[in-house]
Length: 453
Image (cartoon, rainbow, N blue to C red; front, side, top):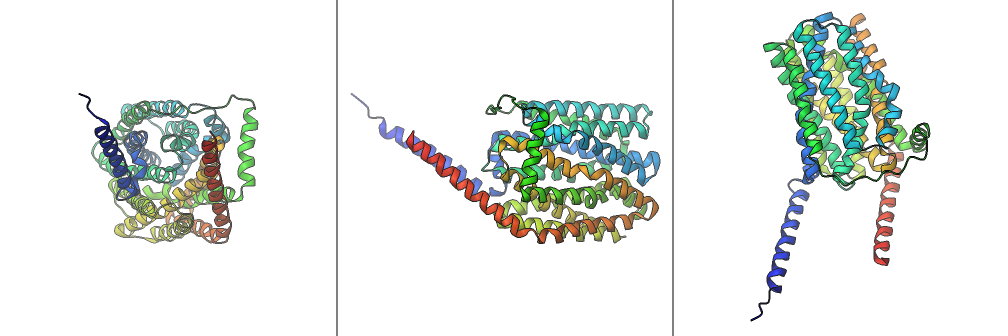
């Protein structure tokens, strides 16, 4: 007797399709703010990066506290920041060309291994009691050189994990990881410094790199096709510069990043001075101030992801981000109260998240994958390039005027960016409309080719 299995097969297929549709509806509904996590590779990246960045923020706080303990100088904090940023200026342009030509996962793994070794060296120097501020400056410069390749590599790598559809959400989630770690790492560092000193922070940071290295090696990625090199490194760099120079929206986004990151955000190098000498809260208070900014940034990321990445929402995020940052930095600069300073730090985190994530998202939506690494290296260079000047300026003002005056001046730079942005909103709207039209045309062309085939 023959058994008709077709109904059973069709029922099984229907159940499978229903299950897939149900899963998709969850990511489009209740979990829409975390949509990028539906991709296994991004889930691995999320876990590994969160653990590693908690360690990185622990080291950042401990290193600043160590420098302040060794020198008791705002200027020394500025010099260490300068040393970390300067290598990125020297090699930033060429780093983007490298990112576009190599396996990005392998590049990131190598960078993480080198940063791990640097953390263990600093741990050994402090544990043996031979650490000097000169050694901290040299290690900061080494970390800056490695990060010149690591930062644009990670930015450009995001699209390989999630595709273009979930790219805006993944960028916001990536920043959420960074700022979630900023919320946890400094608070932990504050307690550890009070209990066992800075050495424990450096050691734990070294161990934390193992998590991100493991997550990268566990990913299953589609091999990215890289065309054979037919032009020189200098020519590839010029292509990236030519694109940005002739694409006005991208150019202005990078200008805003350069001004805001180079001068407004550099107030952060004086936070340990505020914690020690103005708010009198010690290492623990310093940790909480840094954690408060991370908490605000995470809250801001969740709020942005819940709204969705519409063109109008992106422009609104930029405007809100600059003005919120400016007002909050000003409030932090004039505050003599720990609760008010914590509130200001949270609002700074909200503002920074809105402007930085939106800038990153708009840049990556505008650019093609062939130029992505070079454009993101220019983003990194804009983010870092003016920071050496800003860190020295803030450190100098902190020593020769007062830390409070230096921070208030930083707030005026963010305010200036916001006012300038208002004059460029129409340009951004036109560019977004043109990009959306091009995307629709590309989809129609692809569908036509499929029908012909």
